[in-house]
Amino acid sequence: MLNAALALSLLGGIAGLILGAGAAVIVNWVIPALPIQLSLNYILLAELVAGSIGLFAGVVPARRAAGLAPVEALRAE
Image 1 (cartoon, rainbow, N blue to C red):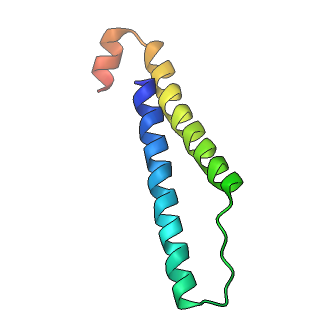
Image 2: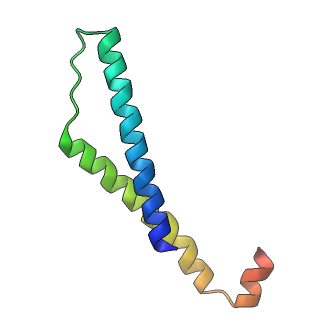
């Protein structure tokens, strides 16, 4: 469960970075005078934030469900 949340969030972060880089290239084609740079520090920070959000989104519901009795958890579904 936790690995899936982390993997999905990191893949989503990579997809967002690819779309953002593509948009930056298109903007650079349309407006060549606009300086556009992709910084490795910001790319790594974006992946770190995406992974952190994924971990948080995976851990909080799992911890909440772990505290419930199995019958109560099934009843809530």
